[in-house]
Length: 332
Ligand code: UT7
Image (cartoon, rainbow, N blue to C red):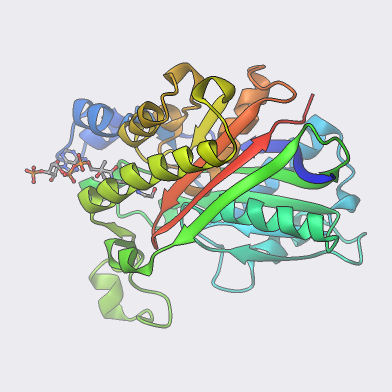
């Protein structure tokens, strides 16, 4: 059976690094607290440009690395919580900046489901190519979290970073590889616990919303942690069980990178040793929709991924939203 598979990957991380010492210099926090509570040592922030600029650089890396002819791309899905604007869609801006004008069937849109957007977009791309609607979907996971972070709030300032990564999703005839199964879900009761209060139609921008710092994200960290730690593990185990995968059958768990303690708890419940778990939160913080594809892209550079590897990717985010995808790696 022909399946959708990831056929190319690229990433971009802006060059400017901010260690925990940067936050120690002006906030009531410490390197020790940040490292032990989150696992983060440093993160990168983009000094200029928007989310689309991060994605465009990741796309060029993908095209150059895999010698992609970009004219074959006929859909762009941008998974982001930090679109350049509410509209036009960042997908349109990315298409324009990449100069993708040769394919008359090209379309695209943004998909916003907080930290689960990338896996939701990957699942959508899978359905698009398997239905024949599209032949080659570029799924972009990118966030400029520094644009919505309150750097005066120690409880969120230290958590996030900026980055982007893209994957191409195409149909492959090889039945040994590709995206095999997915679990996706939402529960809107979690909404108030992690959100960007103002700037939408519920609370449009006013002088007061600016004064009250409501254009920055707000999180009830402990409550989100409790939900994330249970759900990440539950859906990872569920997708393994229903595909008859024992821990020894899984080559890689690629979890969303919100907190190293959530990642290790998920691995423990799935009985996966940490050397089978991809981690980049120490170097990049929580890059929201870049976390998972950035792990994959760097793993290619490090020679960690092999043809046929069983990979589970799992995410949990605001909304609440969650997803777990099982795929077999196909890039040689
Ligand atoms: O990616 C989307 C989904 N998001 C998540 O999955 C994030 C889930 N939540 C978390 O990762 C954790 O809850 C945080 C890392 C955000 C916070 O860690 P925590 O262990 O849950 O800390 P807490 O919020 O319970 O706060 C513990 C203490 C508090 O002080 P008191 O009230 O005990 O005196 C905080 O004020 O730590 C304090 N605190 C800090 N101290 C030093 C909070 N932030 C900091 C800080 N430096 N940066």
